[in-house]
Image (tube, rainbow, N blue to C red; front, side, top):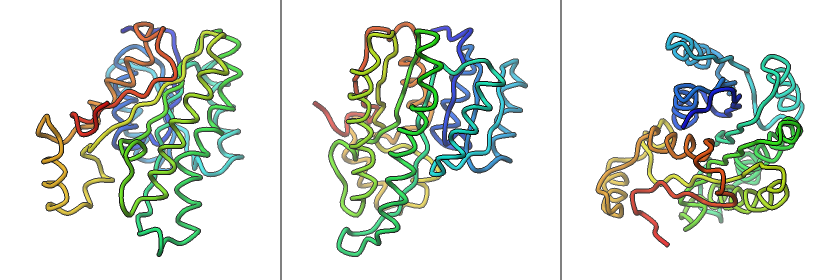
Length: 247
């Protein structure tokens, strides 16, 4: 699944799934522009990629800031000439029962998880149209498919990403641009590390494969969707959940 000659822009790339996606796409030959708020971690990631003979650059970015999105994407295109793979991965949680959820926590999660994907897509789509080749990959969640108590904001944002994926797929398909979503299940990341052991043990009981996933599991799915092997797949939600949700 060679990605030689392609340039990928990955949000939320400083850790977890985003970091794994950057490493995998770079391994497959893509030049990667990695973006997140933590520039120190991004620079470490770039060093790891370039140390393995890959090409990468770090961009400090708060995806909730529209002007930052515009300027950073413009800078990445200026440096690399184009962006033809976009991985919308940036995400946060602000968990609380809906009856107690503060409006600020609702807005924060929707802005970071969903609105940022719209903003980033809008900024890179011109480059993809010019190339007449593009891959947009939105990192959703199993909880955007089945819901989760205490995560009304998170589930809504991830379900929204699925609707956004299908709408964009219909808009740009005629230009050889695909748009797909990956819906991870329980993945071992910094975001899930704060959960109790009891919660994790109960989660594993719901997973037929009998284990939690790792970021590389999701990165492999993203790499496939970015490749020419997936050229006839668009508007699809690829579940990477160990069987936690089927159908």
